[in-house]
Length: 394
Image 1: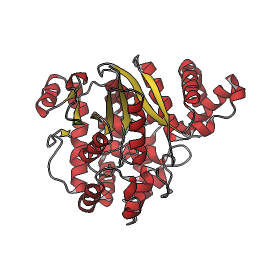
Image 2 (image 1 turned 90 degrees about the vertical axis):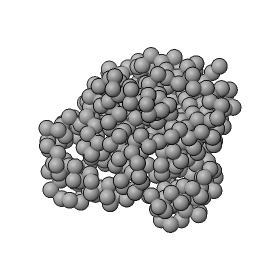
Image 3 (image 1 turned 45 degrees about the horizontal axis):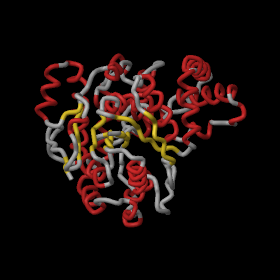
């Protein structure tokens, strides 16, 4: 038996995701386990629709199981997003592959990843040197890796265009995480078809999730309905009644920032270099977007500020990245073999509560998921809490 895992958001599930699942199945995988974000996604924004609907779409599209990626990792930077997923995936029984989408050629991704792993210390030093000029961590990291790789392999040309594409960077981080955590997993790199990750173009068979979300936001859902291969009517109906109230979400984030002490902010997952003072200074206004505009810039990306504001709301401090955790199985096929699941993936609330009672670290990380669900349900006008969930079987 050879099992394969996919890390995903399915925000929402579209034809490109269905294509990737088909390709993975064609590769010979016996079971496909998706590790998917829950209420909030990596951009630190509320998910487009409920995790149960997104998980059911994945099962309909060919996945055998969908496991929730804890919020601590699901809303983190690429490095920790990847590491959190691999911490789950490496313990799946008979796991052989980890599928990932890229826009660059698979051989190029592998070669760059191997170089990054081998020369991580020197690349880190170069990154710090670039940051001293005032560039952000991400920009500095791309510049450092491009420079170091270019010196070693001048014939390969400039790789910066590969590195600035989010899918490619995630691929690199997945491979680095597999190496760091000693997982015996082979990367299965599938070249992305159609639109790029954040492409807003709404024509063609394969468009991005961004384009779909934008079309729905602008009242043009019918123009992209065909790119949602499963449960388009349910998704549309859910959005009409429960689309996240972004004004409420932003107001809650501003309130949390205004109430937070700089000492507390300094402990957050992505806070460094005195960012806590910049944020508190920006909080003189009550306008969320103006806070983002004021704090972001050449040094700090907007996405990083978004994450920090969510961290304040959910009390995510940097120590949580290293803590033990448990999570839940969101969905599975009718004939799924539960025996392949890792020990930290639970199939019922009683098992989750027992894990929390036995381990303070597990409790701390799960508390973030409980808060995230409460926040999401509140801004989506949905009853219930984290424990009001039943595995979707189809």
